[in-house]
Amino acid sequence: MNTSFNGLAVLGAEPALPHRLRLGQHNFPSWERYEAAFRDIFERQYYTNHGPLAQALEQRLAERLRVGHAICVTTATIGLALAAQALGVKGKVIVPALSYVQTAQSLAWAGVEPEFCDVCEESGHLTPDSVAPFLRDGVTGMLAVNLWGGAADIRGLQQVAERRGIKLYIDSAQAFACEIGGKAVGGFGRLEVISFHSSHILGAAEGAVVCTDDDDLAAHVRNIRSNYGMGRPVPVGKTGNGRLSEAQAAVALMNLDDLPELLARNHRQFEAYRSHLEGIPGLQLVSPTGVSASNYQNVVCLIDAQRFGLSRDVLISVLAAENVEAVGDLGIGAEWRKAGSSGTVLPNAERWCKSVLQLPIGAQLDEGAVERIAARIRLAQRHAADVARKLGG
Image (spheres, rainbow, N blue to C red):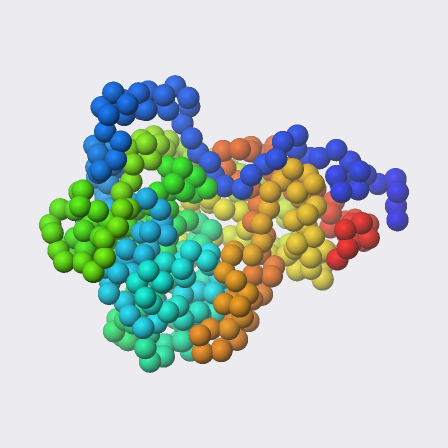
């Protein structure tokens, strides 16, 4: 072992960053703006129940996304559950095995079984070719997922849905401000759900919006959400409390005002990663695909352990020692990933889940931090044998 080398924290050097750098956008307004907005809420003493700020947010979102209805709810998981019930999907719904567990879990509320589907080898998204083997009897819908500032082949999937007479809706949690062919994400499929979690570009600490151009579906979602702001009454099988609070709406409105600056910052940081990670053996930066405009809210790499010299999971440990949070597997359990409901093997999703690595981008770092993170990754690859002896694997 080369004992003179100590450029990595796992080998005795100082961490790249003095404090832990979390994943996610975490866009919050200045304290002065935050305080003013909340004083207004406290003076009105109107905290929830489809208040004026929630109504203003829905109007602005509908205008920006060019959709007939933008219905704000408490979380994206609740939004997806409301969407499944409003659509009336039954039996099985195709879901990509490369996604987050909440995507599939949202179907349980509607009593629907996920039919886990493999993904495109190159993009990690659903395409007509990837879903074709899973269009079996009993499938009544497709829940596509737009990941990492990119998108599935939504127009191709829409053609498949129309030809097969099934319902396409979309988990666009990570895709606010993305565009497909010049059209804003939010206006595709029967319904789309976009998240306002603090890890996403338009953060409200937590929250989401359900978008649709279908008046009947919108009425159904509003009536399930709560009896406040429901508009036209329609009969629903279940109701819940999915209202967005005034506090959430206030933060979302301020971040909506700041959106051009936030998008420009993400693009700068993404390009800084592209520049500083270029040429590292066994590391591929995943560029957003399927979109004509990206929000660049996620930095995702694929790690080829054989060429890089270390596994993805060991690299995560190396970065943790540098005070850099990085994650791999997206969260759907291995027992779900490895086989669909019918026992079909899902090799592309499994490969992505074993090699994907997400790095920080957003409000907590700048291009200088990006350079330091990339430098430690490069050092880890160059000294992979030393690291492997220290950490194993």
